[in-house]
Image (cartoon, rainbow, N blue to C red; front, side, top):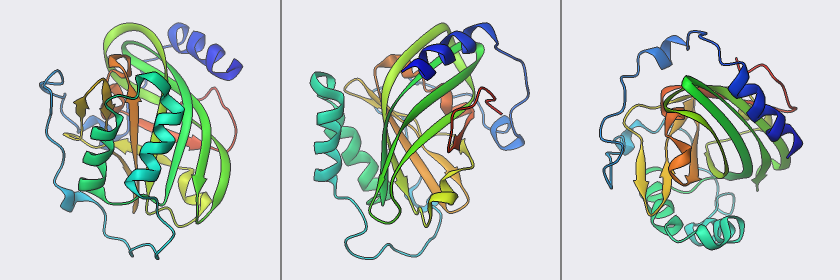
Length: 215
């Protein structure tokens, strides 16, 4: 948690007006984020990739069970969000459990750390950081579960994932968005409104070690 605590202070005191990548700049602002079920992107968007072999993916029951143990008493709406993710994107071949801190003054920064669980590449400590366009002022900390799809190797995870416009989904106190990079994509699931969905207008960069550079 020391990395997250220092990152939260750094995010609030070192907000910069650096331009987002062209892919992120092209994404229009989200509309109606307070609606109970904002639209998900067409499942056909999901990048075409070879189907994982049997036994390499996680079922919805396995993910929900892991999420209940991770989020604890606040996990009431988790099953509904996981069901929506599985109906849109299928079974992931990995997931990340971790914690993150973020701060925003219209433009924001986000830092996090957690652990990747995958039947194809094993377990690995991972870190992430990146800029986002937020909708409020201040900072927050949250637990987050990320579903990882089409991850062929550990090295494939360590790159930038850009938010997909229209992928915001809110229900039961949980928010979900879609991030994509090449054939691999990540679905972060966060508890509470504090998630801000700002990441949908930015990107996350995954790294093997902690870093203060969000870009």
